[in-house]
Amino acid sequence: MLEQTVPIVANERDTDLYFRLVVRAPQIAPLVQPGQFAHVRILPLKTALLRRPFSIFQVAGDTFSILYKTVGQGTAVLARMRPGEELSVLGPLGHGFTVPSPGGETPLLVAGGYGMAALYLLAERSPQKGIVFVGGRRRVDILRATEFAALGWEVRAATQDGSHGERGLVTQPLLAELRRGAAGRKLFACGPTPMLQAVGQLAEQFNVPAELSMDEHMCCGVGVCLACVIPVQSGDTWEYQRTCTEGPVFDARAIAWEGVRGAPACSRPAG
Ligand SMILES: Cc1cc2nc3c(=O)[nH]c(=O)nc-3n(C[C@H](O)[C@H](O)[C@H](O)COP(=O)(O)OP(=O)(O)OC[C@H]3O[C@@H](n4cnc5c(N)ncnc54)[C@H](O)[C@@H]3O)c2cc1C
Ligand code: FES
Image (cartoon, rainbow, N blue to C red):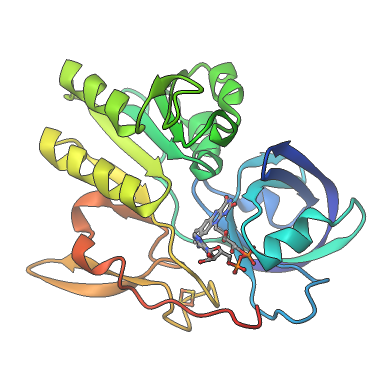
């Protein structure tokens, strides 16, 4: 894990509220594993000391990129930053996805909205290609599907308003696929918590392994403040584990869902 002040190479609107940001980070980029994240301090946000976590989307040479949605104060300021301006980045952080081994289970990826960002490096580095199930409310929430297709993955989209792919939740086409055959498959998912819980339930129902990247609020990002803990099964009992260090990727079978939404979160009145 390294801290670097890095220049922005590109920061462009992708669709609607989503942007793609590229930074030059020669020390961090080569270390990135699929599913890891960067903790970004948005330097012009003078009132805010806290960093914002973003999955690392792509790595190219000494650069890496993120896909972000503008949702609040930090991402609004980030969206106005221009190439040449600097960010402070801590990374790569967290425990990511297990890259499938050759001849192992066929991967089925499940993404909701910006969850696509966490799954791209896994898709790129997996020796075997499978299916990517991608969902969102509207067409504009389906991010970068063509880039997964270009890697040789089959992409199946679902939108809640029916504007792209199947109408409904992304778990519908996933359920249909698992009914066709679940043996030898493994699920990898990133997206909103209700989607992750639904994927976890399907994994249990069909007895397939699943790794889920949990989206919890974070403060320090490095295991100190305990703002990001979730309850995780450990033997016959359970314990709190930190999403930023033990996660964000967890084995679906270990997550004690009834406690996840009540996990402590930092408030960010001043950022
Ligand atoms: C491991 C991890 C990876 C992430 N990867 C991405 C990514 O690739 N792309 C992306 O756009 N976002 C990602 N996020 C979410 C991102 O960190 C938040 O959207 C961001 O911190 C919001 O900052 P802000 O200052 O704009 O919003 P704030 O002003 O702090 O909050 C605005 C709104 O966003 C909500 N929010 C804040 N943090 C989160 C969060 N962690 N998850 C969901 N909602 C949140 C707040 O509750 C509030 O409603 C990730 C989060 C985690 C934990
Ligand atoms: S964010 Fe501080 S311990 Fe995880």
